[in-house]
Each structure stands twice: as C-alpha cells, then as structure tokens.
Amino acid sequence: MALIEVKNLTLKDRLDSVSFSVEPGEMLAVIGPNGAGKSSLLQSLAGLLPASGDIFLSGIPLRGIKPNERARQLGFLPQFCDSAWALAVEEIVALGRLPWRDRDPEALRQAMRETGIEGMARKSINQLSGGEQARVWLARVLAGTPQVFLADEPIASLDLYYQGKIMDILRQHASGARSVILAIHDLALAARYCDRFCLLKQGRIHAFGSPETVLTEAALSDAFGVPIHVDLAHSPPIILPA
Image (cartoon, rainbow, N blue to C red; front, side, top):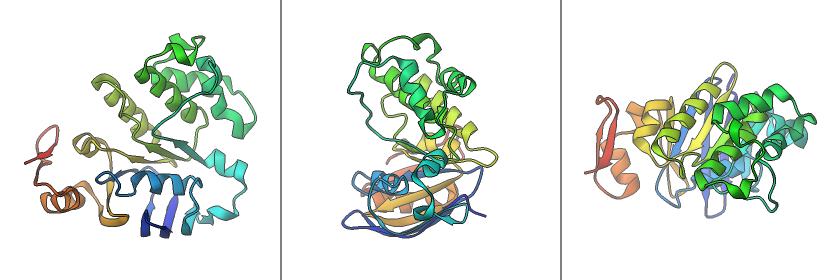
C-alpha cells in the first residue's frame, strides 16, 4: 500500500489535476522551474492550502484524520522559517514534539546530533548564521519523527558540506515505513539521492517516474525552456544547461 496517495489535486492557478503515490522507503524529488507549483504541492499535502482532490495517508483520507494525528504523521519544513522570539535552539527543536505532547529526550538528541547542532543547543536562534538556522528548523521536524517528511528546498541556504549531509539525513529518514517528498532545484544532487521524480510544468505533472524516465534532455529542456545536457552515467551525475 502506498504511504501517501494523491488524486486530482487541484488549486486554482497553481495545481491542475496532480495525481501520484509514494511508497514506504521512497524519496521523491519534486522539480520544475520557478512557478511550476512545487511549493504549492507540498503546502497542499501539508494541509496548508485548500486544494481540492483527495489525499490518502496509508489508505486513510487525510481529511478524516484528526489534526493532531496528522501532525504526527506529516512533518513539513517550509522554504523560509523565522522565529518571532529569540528562542534557544533546544526550545525550537522541542517544538517538533508538540503533536506528541512530550519532550522525548532521545528524539531531541538524535535530531540535533543528525543535523550537527548539539553545540548550539543553548544559543539563541538569532545568533546563528542562515545555514545554521536552516539546520535548526530541519532538526525541529526530525524531532517529530514523521512518517512522511515534506521538505521545501531544504538545502537552499547550506554550504556544500551540509547540502550532502542533509541529503544523507533525508535519505536515511526515507527508509523502512517512512518516506520523504522534497522540492529541490539541484537536479544533479537529487539524481544521486532520490528514487523517483515528479517534474511539474505550469501546475501539471510533465513527467513522473525514475531518474532515467524523468531526467531526460527532452523532458527537462521542454519544462525549463532551455537546452539541458544530461549524463546520468557519470559519477556524480551531470545535469547542466547545454
């Protein structure tokens, strides 16, 4: 059974009859040009936008799941995060446990250890660099141990080391009974980590499937409007404007 299944998801001027499913253990990359609907899709899956259509979580309609239980199952990392208060890092990470109504110390330790922020635990969030803050917000979602991790551009503000580190973390999270769906612009990096791809163009699915199926010169060039060179046989994969 699919962990998450989407049927005819539609949002005026943003998404048009989007349908797909993600299996347990899969990491799905949502790709496409700016304005294609990537963020809108993730926000709709998270229940933050009023899209029509059907979303099923382990076969159960998402609209029939109580909000607190839904928050335990679906973790969402938006593209931009901010704190209205100068909270300590450990307090922000602990917010990820709110749906569980606890502060499971092991879950918090593991989330901070995985993201490399243990030494920042008592620092104020406003004392950190943009890249450090990005890892704090990632740790907050990880602390909630969601079945489906929705991440909108999780590596956008990170240096090369932490881009790979965060992709490693998400790849590890997408194991066993859990899955990850992420929007990402770095196609070559996504090709190294993701099992399947959802290529959006003007709110519709332009291509869906394995890297070999979706990351073709024809499909990418058509979606992005520029010639694109693709070499998936190279290690690491090469995907660049031609």
